[in-house]
Image (cartoon, rainbow, N blue to C red; front, side):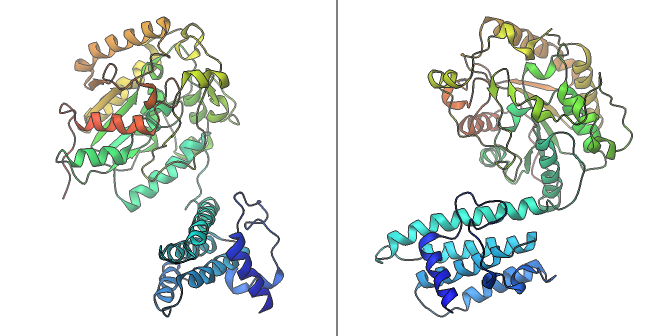
Length: 441
Protein backbone atom coordinates (compact mmCIF):
# COMPACT_ATOMS: atom_id res chain seq x y z
CA UNK A 1 0.00 0.00 0.00
CA UNK A 2 2.89 2.32 0.76
CA UNK A 3 4.29 1.75 -2.75
CA UNK A 4 0.92 2.48 -4.39
CA UNK A 5 0.61 5.63 -2.35
CA UNK A 6 4.03 6.76 -3.59
CA UNK A 7 3.13 5.94 -7.20
CA UNK A 8 -0.19 7.76 -6.84
CA UNK A 9 1.67 10.83 -5.67
CA UNK A 10 3.96 10.51 -8.68
CA UNK A 11 0.93 10.28 -10.97
CA UNK A 12 -0.46 13.49 -9.54
CA UNK A 13 2.80 15.43 -9.60
CA UNK A 14 4.86 13.96 -12.45
CA UNK A 15 2.29 12.67 -14.95
CA UNK A 16 4.11 9.29 -15.37
CA UNK A 17 5.62 9.63 -18.83
CA UNK A 18 8.36 11.95 -19.90
CA UNK A 19 7.78 13.79 -23.17
CA UNK A 20 10.10 11.33 -24.92
CA UNK A 21 10.19 8.03 -23.00
CA UNK A 22 13.22 5.86 -23.60
CA UNK A 23 12.84 2.80 -25.81
CA UNK A 24 13.57 0.39 -22.99
CA UNK A 25 11.34 2.16 -20.50
CA UNK A 26 8.03 3.40 -21.91
CA UNK A 27 7.28 5.46 -18.82
CA UNK A 28 10.64 7.20 -18.75
CA UNK A 29 11.68 5.75 -15.34
CA UNK A 30 12.84 2.41 -14.04
CA UNK A 31 9.88 0.17 -13.31
CA UNK A 32 9.50 -1.22 -9.81
CA UNK A 33 9.08 -5.02 -9.68
CA UNK A 34 6.04 -4.51 -7.48
CA UNK A 35 4.24 -2.71 -10.32
CA UNK A 36 4.82 -5.45 -12.92
CA UNK A 37 1.67 -7.39 -12.27
CA UNK A 38 1.48 -10.46 -14.50
CA UNK A 39 -2.19 -9.97 -15.18
CA UNK A 40 -1.54 -6.52 -16.65
CA UNK A 41 0.92 -7.49 -19.39
CA UNK A 42 -0.21 -10.96 -20.40
CA UNK A 43 -2.82 -9.87 -22.91
CA UNK A 44 -4.71 -12.96 -21.71
CA UNK A 45 -6.13 -13.68 -25.14
CA UNK A 46 -9.31 -11.85 -24.17
CA UNK A 47 -11.33 -10.09 -26.81
CA UNK A 48 -10.08 -6.51 -27.11
CA UNK A 49 -13.54 -5.08 -27.52
CA UNK A 50 -14.71 -6.80 -24.34
CA UNK A 51 -11.79 -5.32 -22.42
CA UNK A 52 -12.53 -1.80 -23.64
CA UNK A 53 -16.24 -2.18 -22.88
CA UNK A 54 -15.36 -3.50 -19.42
CA UNK A 55 -13.20 -0.46 -18.73
CA UNK A 56 -15.98 1.87 -19.84
CA UNK A 57 -18.57 -0.02 -17.79
CA UNK A 58 -16.34 0.12 -14.75
CA UNK A 59 -15.92 3.86 -15.23
CA UNK A 60 -19.69 4.36 -15.51
CA UNK A 61 -20.31 2.31 -12.37
CA UNK A 62 -18.03 4.43 -10.20
CA UNK A 63 -19.76 6.23 -7.31
CA UNK A 64 -20.08 9.99 -7.46
CA UNK A 65 -16.70 11.03 -6.10
CA UNK A 66 -14.28 13.82 -6.84
CA UNK A 67 -13.39 13.60 -10.57
CA UNK A 68 -9.84 14.63 -9.72
CA UNK A 69 -9.40 11.57 -7.50
CA UNK A 70 -11.00 9.27 -10.07
CA UNK A 71 -8.73 10.70 -12.78
CA UNK A 72 -5.68 10.03 -10.62
CA UNK A 73 -6.81 6.45 -9.99
CA UNK A 74 -7.34 5.83 -13.70
CA UNK A 75 -3.95 7.37 -14.52
CA UNK A 76 -2.34 5.02 -12.00
CA UNK A 77 -3.99 2.05 -13.72
CA UNK A 78 -2.76 3.32 -17.11
CA UNK A 79 0.78 3.60 -15.75
CA UNK A 80 0.67 0.09 -14.31
CA UNK A 81 -0.57 -1.37 -17.60
CA UNK A 82 2.18 0.43 -19.52
CA UNK A 83 4.86 -0.91 -17.15
CA UNK A 84 4.36 -4.45 -18.40
CA UNK A 85 2.88 -3.81 -21.87
CA UNK A 86 4.24 -6.25 -24.44
CA UNK A 87 1.56 -6.42 -27.13
CA UNK A 88 -0.67 -4.07 -29.16
CA UNK A 89 -3.57 -5.15 -26.96
CA UNK A 90 -1.67 -4.08 -23.83
CA UNK A 91 -0.92 -0.67 -25.31
CA UNK A 92 -4.53 -0.33 -26.42
CA UNK A 93 -5.63 -0.85 -22.82
CA UNK A 94 -3.10 1.68 -21.60
CA UNK A 95 -4.26 4.22 -24.18
CA UNK A 96 -7.92 3.73 -23.22
CA UNK A 97 -7.09 4.20 -19.55
CA UNK A 98 -5.14 7.40 -20.25
CA UNK A 99 -7.98 8.77 -22.35
CA UNK A 100 -10.45 8.02 -19.56
CA UNK A 101 -8.11 9.78 -17.14
CA UNK A 102 -8.13 12.78 -19.47
CA UNK A 103 -11.93 12.77 -19.58
CA UNK A 104 -12.20 12.65 -15.80
CA UNK A 105 -9.54 15.29 -15.19
CA UNK A 106 -11.17 17.60 -17.75
CA UNK A 107 -14.44 17.29 -15.82
CA UNK A 108 -12.97 19.10 -12.81
CA UNK A 109 -15.26 22.16 -12.88
CA UNK A 110 -13.94 25.69 -13.54
CA UNK A 111 -14.89 26.82 -10.03
CA UNK A 112 -12.86 24.09 -8.34
CA UNK A 113 -9.59 25.17 -6.74
CA UNK A 114 -7.92 22.14 -8.37
CA UNK A 115 -8.92 23.28 -11.88
CA UNK A 116 -5.64 24.98 -12.88
CA UNK A 117 -3.57 21.99 -11.75
CA UNK A 118 -6.00 19.58 -13.40
CA UNK A 119 -5.65 21.33 -16.76
CA UNK A 120 -1.90 20.81 -16.67
CA UNK A 121 -2.46 17.12 -15.95
CA UNK A 122 -4.84 16.88 -18.91
CA UNK A 123 -2.03 17.95 -21.22
CA UNK A 124 0.37 15.44 -19.64
CA UNK A 125 -2.13 12.61 -19.84
CA UNK A 126 -2.86 13.40 -23.49
CA UNK A 127 0.85 13.11 -24.20
CA UNK A 128 0.93 9.77 -22.41
CA UNK A 129 -2.10 8.57 -24.37
CA UNK A 130 -0.45 9.60 -27.63
CA UNK A 131 2.64 7.61 -26.72
CA UNK A 132 0.58 4.51 -25.89
CA UNK A 133 -1.31 4.83 -29.18
CA UNK A 134 1.95 5.13 -31.11
CA UNK A 135 3.27 2.01 -29.37
CA UNK A 136 0.11 0.11 -30.24
CA UNK A 137 0.40 1.18 -33.86
CA UNK A 138 4.09 0.40 -34.26
CA UNK A 139 3.81 -2.95 -32.48
CA UNK A 140 1.51 -4.41 -35.10
CA UNK A 141 0.21 -2.83 -38.31
CA UNK A 142 -2.33 -5.62 -38.79
CA UNK A 143 -0.41 -7.82 -41.23
CA UNK A 144 3.06 -8.43 -42.53
CA UNK A 145 3.97 -7.28 -46.03
CA UNK A 146 7.45 -6.88 -47.53
CA UNK A 147 8.72 -3.39 -48.18
CA UNK A 148 8.34 -1.46 -51.42
CA UNK A 149 11.62 0.33 -50.62
CA UNK A 150 9.55 3.35 -49.63
CA UNK A 151 8.46 3.73 -45.98
CA UNK A 152 5.67 6.12 -46.95
CA UNK A 153 4.29 3.74 -49.57
CA UNK A 154 4.59 0.86 -47.09
CA UNK A 155 2.61 2.81 -44.50
CA UNK A 156 -0.02 4.03 -46.94
CA UNK A 157 -0.52 0.55 -48.39
CA UNK A 158 -1.29 -0.83 -44.93
CA UNK A 159 -3.53 2.15 -44.22
CA UNK A 160 -5.33 1.83 -47.56
CA UNK A 161 -6.14 -1.85 -47.00
CA UNK A 162 -7.41 -0.99 -43.54
CA UNK A 163 -9.47 1.86 -45.02
CA UNK A 164 -11.08 -0.59 -47.46
CA UNK A 165 -12.13 -2.82 -44.57
CA UNK A 166 -13.28 -0.02 -42.26
CA UNK A 167 -14.84 2.49 -44.67
CA UNK A 168 -15.06 0.83 -48.08
CA UNK A 169 -13.70 1.63 -51.52
CA UNK A 170 -13.00 5.35 -51.90
CA UNK A 171 -15.21 7.12 -54.41
CA UNK A 172 -12.34 9.48 -55.18
CA UNK A 173 -8.69 8.41 -55.09
CA UNK A 174 -6.07 11.17 -54.98
CA UNK A 175 -2.73 10.14 -56.50
CA UNK A 176 0.54 11.91 -57.21
CA UNK A 177 3.82 12.81 -55.56
CA UNK A 178 4.56 14.50 -52.23
CA UNK A 179 2.91 17.59 -53.70
CA UNK A 180 -0.34 15.60 -53.76
CA UNK A 181 0.27 13.86 -50.42
CA UNK A 182 0.28 17.19 -48.61
CA UNK A 183 -1.50 19.28 -51.26
CA UNK A 184 -5.13 18.11 -51.12
CA UNK A 185 -6.95 17.55 -47.84
CA UNK A 186 -9.50 14.71 -48.37
CA UNK A 187 -11.62 15.66 -45.35
CA UNK A 188 -11.82 19.29 -46.42
CA UNK A 189 -12.76 18.13 -49.92
CA UNK A 190 -15.48 15.89 -48.46
CA UNK A 191 -16.92 18.78 -46.44
CA UNK A 192 -16.81 21.18 -49.38
CA UNK A 193 -18.41 18.67 -51.74
CA UNK A 194 -21.14 17.95 -49.21
CA UNK A 195 -22.14 21.62 -49.38
CA UNK A 196 -22.40 21.20 -53.15
CA UNK A 197 -24.82 18.28 -52.84
CA UNK A 198 -22.22 15.49 -52.90
CA UNK A 199 -22.48 14.41 -49.28
CA UNK A 200 -21.16 11.04 -48.16
CA UNK A 201 -18.32 10.69 -50.67
CA UNK A 202 -15.34 8.65 -49.52
CA UNK A 203 -11.99 10.21 -50.45
CA UNK A 204 -8.48 8.82 -49.86
CA UNK A 205 -5.11 10.43 -50.58
CA UNK A 206 -2.64 7.88 -51.96
CA UNK A 207 0.07 10.38 -52.89
CA UNK A 208 3.65 9.23 -52.18
CA UNK A 209 7.04 10.90 -52.31
CA UNK A 210 8.61 11.06 -55.75
CA UNK A 211 5.65 9.54 -57.62
CA UNK A 212 5.92 9.98 -61.40
CA UNK A 213 3.50 8.96 -64.14
CA UNK A 214 5.14 5.53 -64.09
CA UNK A 215 4.57 5.19 -60.33
CA UNK A 216 0.93 6.30 -60.51
CA UNK A 217 0.32 3.86 -63.38
CA UNK A 218 1.93 1.10 -61.28
CA UNK A 219 -0.26 1.96 -58.28
CA UNK A 220 -3.48 1.61 -60.26
CA UNK A 221 -2.62 -1.34 -62.50
CA UNK A 222 -0.28 -3.36 -60.31
CA UNK A 223 -0.69 -2.48 -56.65
CA UNK A 224 -4.49 -2.31 -56.77
CA UNK A 225 -4.89 -5.31 -59.07
CA UNK A 226 -7.76 -7.42 -57.77
CA UNK A 227 -8.94 -4.62 -55.48
CA UNK A 228 -12.09 -2.56 -56.06
CA UNK A 229 -11.28 0.64 -57.91
CA UNK A 230 -12.42 4.22 -57.20
CA UNK A 231 -15.09 5.97 -59.24
CA UNK A 232 -12.88 8.99 -59.95
CA UNK A 233 -9.11 9.37 -60.13
CA UNK A 234 -7.86 12.79 -59.04
CA UNK A 235 -4.26 12.99 -60.24
CA UNK A 236 -2.66 15.97 -58.52
CA UNK A 237 0.85 17.07 -59.45
CA UNK A 238 2.91 19.09 -61.94
CA UNK A 239 5.49 18.92 -64.68
CA UNK A 240 8.16 17.12 -62.66
CA UNK A 241 6.12 13.90 -62.70
CA UNK A 242 6.25 13.83 -66.51
CA UNK A 243 9.91 14.54 -67.24
CA UNK A 244 11.26 11.44 -68.99
CA UNK A 245 14.69 13.03 -69.26
CA UNK A 246 15.60 12.41 -65.63
CA UNK A 247 16.18 9.12 -63.84
CA UNK A 248 12.98 7.82 -62.23
CA UNK A 249 14.51 6.63 -58.96
CA UNK A 250 11.17 6.17 -57.25
CA UNK A 251 9.81 3.79 -59.84
CA UNK A 252 13.07 1.88 -60.10
CA UNK A 253 13.24 1.37 -56.34
CA UNK A 254 9.65 0.16 -56.17
CA UNK A 255 9.82 -2.39 -59.01
CA UNK A 256 13.01 -3.93 -57.59
CA UNK A 257 11.49 -4.20 -54.11
CA UNK A 258 10.39 -7.34 -52.20
CA UNK A 259 6.90 -5.85 -52.04
CA UNK A 260 6.67 -5.63 -55.81
CA UNK A 261 7.88 -9.20 -56.18
CA UNK A 262 5.11 -10.28 -53.80
CA UNK A 263 2.57 -8.79 -56.18
CA UNK A 264 3.56 -11.42 -58.75
CA UNK A 265 4.77 -11.26 -62.31
CA UNK A 266 4.61 -7.78 -63.75
CA UNK A 267 5.02 -6.28 -67.18
CA UNK A 268 6.54 -3.14 -65.63
CA UNK A 269 10.33 -3.10 -65.41
CA UNK A 270 12.89 -0.52 -64.30
CA UNK A 271 14.79 1.39 -66.95
CA UNK A 272 18.08 0.59 -65.23
CA UNK A 273 19.38 -1.38 -62.28
CA UNK A 274 19.25 0.08 -58.77
CA UNK A 275 20.43 -1.10 -55.40
CA UNK A 276 17.33 -2.73 -53.83
CA UNK A 277 18.65 -1.82 -50.38
CA UNK A 278 18.38 1.87 -51.23
CA UNK A 279 15.00 3.28 -50.29
CA UNK A 280 13.25 6.09 -52.05
CA UNK A 281 13.29 8.23 -48.93
CA UNK A 282 17.07 7.97 -48.63
CA UNK A 283 17.42 9.16 -52.21
CA UNK A 284 14.82 11.88 -51.84
CA UNK A 285 15.76 13.16 -48.39
CA UNK A 286 15.91 16.55 -50.04
CA UNK A 287 14.65 17.78 -53.35
CA UNK A 288 17.21 20.27 -54.64
CA UNK A 289 17.69 21.65 -51.17
CA UNK A 290 13.97 21.53 -50.36
CA UNK A 291 13.29 19.28 -47.34
CA UNK A 292 10.65 16.61 -47.87
CA UNK A 293 8.73 15.55 -44.74
CA UNK A 294 9.59 11.87 -44.33
CA UNK A 295 7.75 11.04 -41.12
CA UNK A 296 4.77 8.78 -41.71
CA UNK A 297 3.40 9.33 -38.21
CA UNK A 298 1.65 12.50 -39.37
CA UNK A 299 -0.52 10.71 -41.94
CA UNK A 300 -4.20 11.04 -41.10
CA UNK A 301 -6.86 8.35 -41.57
CA UNK A 302 -7.53 9.49 -45.13
CA UNK A 303 -3.89 9.31 -46.19
CA UNK A 304 -3.27 13.07 -46.02
CA UNK A 305 -0.07 14.57 -44.57
CA UNK A 306 -0.94 17.92 -42.98
CA UNK A 307 2.07 20.26 -42.75
CA UNK A 308 1.77 23.36 -40.60
CA UNK A 309 4.95 25.11 -41.74
CA UNK A 310 4.56 28.44 -43.53
CA UNK A 311 7.02 29.43 -46.23
CA UNK A 312 8.87 32.65 -45.48
CA UNK A 313 11.71 33.34 -47.95
CA UNK A 314 13.52 35.59 -45.48
CA UNK A 315 14.00 32.76 -42.99
CA UNK A 316 13.73 29.72 -45.25
CA UNK A 317 16.91 30.41 -47.19
CA UNK A 318 18.84 30.88 -43.99
CA UNK A 319 18.32 27.14 -43.46
CA UNK A 320 18.25 25.79 -47.02
CA UNK A 321 20.26 26.84 -50.06
CA UNK A 322 18.51 28.46 -52.97
CA UNK A 323 18.67 26.33 -56.12
CA UNK A 324 17.81 27.98 -59.40
CA UNK A 325 15.92 26.22 -62.16
CA UNK A 326 19.09 25.97 -64.21
CA UNK A 327 20.50 23.51 -61.67
CA UNK A 328 17.24 21.81 -60.66
CA UNK A 329 17.60 18.07 -61.31
CA UNK A 330 13.83 17.65 -61.67
CA UNK A 331 13.99 19.60 -64.93
CA UNK A 332 17.14 17.90 -66.17
CA UNK A 333 16.95 16.97 -69.90
CA UNK A 334 13.32 18.10 -69.82
CA UNK A 335 11.29 15.74 -72.02
CA UNK A 336 7.51 15.40 -71.95
CA UNK A 337 7.55 12.37 -74.24
CA UNK A 338 9.19 9.02 -73.58
CA UNK A 339 8.45 6.62 -70.74
CA UNK A 340 6.39 9.01 -68.62
CA UNK A 341 4.11 9.90 -71.54
CA UNK A 342 3.68 6.20 -72.26
CA UNK A 343 2.81 5.55 -68.63
CA UNK A 344 0.21 8.32 -68.66
CA UNK A 345 -1.33 6.93 -71.85
CA UNK A 346 -1.45 3.45 -70.28
CA UNK A 347 -3.08 4.75 -67.12
CA UNK A 348 -5.74 6.78 -68.94
CA UNK A 349 -6.51 3.86 -71.25
CA UNK A 350 -6.83 1.52 -68.27
CA UNK A 351 -9.17 3.91 -66.48
CA UNK A 352 -11.26 4.51 -69.60
CA UNK A 353 -11.73 0.77 -70.11
CA UNK A 354 -13.28 0.68 -66.64
CA UNK A 355 -15.27 3.88 -67.12
CA UNK A 356 -13.31 5.75 -64.46
CA UNK A 357 -12.80 9.46 -65.20
CA UNK A 358 -9.28 10.81 -64.76
CA UNK A 359 -8.87 14.44 -63.72
CA UNK A 360 -5.36 15.91 -63.73
CA UNK A 361 -4.93 18.89 -61.43
CA UNK A 362 -1.89 21.10 -61.97
CA UNK A 363 -0.94 22.49 -58.56
CA UNK A 364 0.29 26.05 -58.00
CA UNK A 365 3.87 27.02 -57.22
CA UNK A 366 5.25 30.06 -55.43
CA UNK A 367 6.50 33.04 -57.39
CA UNK A 368 9.80 32.60 -55.56
CA UNK A 369 10.17 29.11 -57.06
CA UNK A 370 9.24 30.09 -60.60
CA UNK A 371 12.40 31.71 -61.88
CA UNK A 372 12.64 32.24 -65.67
CA UNK A 373 14.00 28.72 -66.33
CA UNK A 374 11.29 26.92 -64.36
CA UNK A 375 8.65 29.29 -65.69
CA UNK A 376 9.60 28.30 -69.24
CA UNK A 377 9.38 24.56 -68.50
CA UNK A 378 6.09 24.95 -66.62
CA UNK A 379 4.61 26.92 -69.53
CA UNK A 380 5.67 24.17 -71.93
CA UNK A 381 4.03 21.59 -69.69
CA UNK A 382 0.73 23.47 -69.47
CA UNK A 383 0.53 23.90 -73.24
CA UNK A 384 1.35 20.22 -73.76
CA UNK A 385 -1.32 18.99 -71.33
CA UNK A 386 -3.99 21.33 -72.66
CA UNK A 387 -3.29 20.07 -76.15
CA UNK A 388 -3.37 16.33 -75.48
CA UNK A 389 -6.12 16.20 -72.81
CA UNK A 390 -9.12 16.06 -75.21
CA UNK A 391 -7.70 13.26 -77.35
CA UNK A 392 -5.97 11.38 -74.51
CA UNK A 393 -9.22 11.20 -72.58
CA UNK A 394 -8.55 13.02 -69.31
CA UNK A 395 -9.76 16.32 -67.88
CA UNK A 396 -7.12 19.01 -67.36
CA UNK A 397 -7.62 21.48 -64.52
CA UNK A 398 -5.01 24.17 -63.95
CA UNK A 399 -4.87 25.83 -60.53
CA UNK A 400 -2.07 28.23 -61.40
CA UNK A 401 -3.03 31.89 -61.46
CA UNK A 402 -6.04 31.40 -59.18
CA UNK A 403 -4.75 33.11 -56.06
CA UNK A 404 -3.30 29.93 -54.57
CA UNK A 405 0.35 30.90 -55.03
CA UNK A 406 0.55 32.96 -51.82
CA UNK A 407 3.43 32.07 -49.50
CA UNK A 408 1.01 31.54 -46.62
CA UNK A 409 -0.33 28.49 -48.47
CA UNK A 410 3.08 26.84 -48.80
CA UNK A 411 5.43 24.90 -46.54
CA UNK A 412 8.35 25.46 -48.90
CA UNK A 413 8.70 26.95 -52.41
CA UNK A 414 6.85 24.10 -54.15
CA UNK A 415 4.90 22.13 -51.51
CA UNK A 416 1.59 23.28 -50.07
CA UNK A 417 0.93 23.35 -46.34
CA UNK A 418 -2.30 22.37 -44.57
CA UNK A 419 -3.90 25.77 -45.20
CA UNK A 420 -3.03 25.54 -48.89
CA UNK A 421 -4.32 21.96 -49.09
CA UNK A 422 -7.65 23.10 -47.66
CA UNK A 423 -7.84 26.02 -50.11
CA UNK A 424 -7.12 23.67 -53.02
CA UNK A 425 -9.83 21.30 -51.81
CA UNK A 426 -12.37 24.12 -51.70
CA UNK A 427 -11.51 25.28 -55.22
CA UNK A 428 -11.80 21.75 -56.58
CA UNK A 429 -15.16 21.23 -54.88
CA UNK A 430 -16.47 24.38 -56.57
CA UNK A 431 -15.29 23.25 -60.01
CA UNK A 432 -18.45 22.23 -61.85
CA UNK A 433 -16.42 20.75 -64.72
CA UNK A 434 -15.15 17.89 -62.55
CA UNK A 435 -17.46 14.86 -62.82
CA UNK A 436 -17.76 14.16 -59.11
CA UNK A 437 -19.47 10.82 -58.50
CA UNK A 438 -22.91 10.87 -56.95
CA UNK A 439 -23.03 9.35 -53.45
CA UNK A 440 -24.20 5.75 -53.37
CA UNK A 441 -27.06 4.75 -51.14
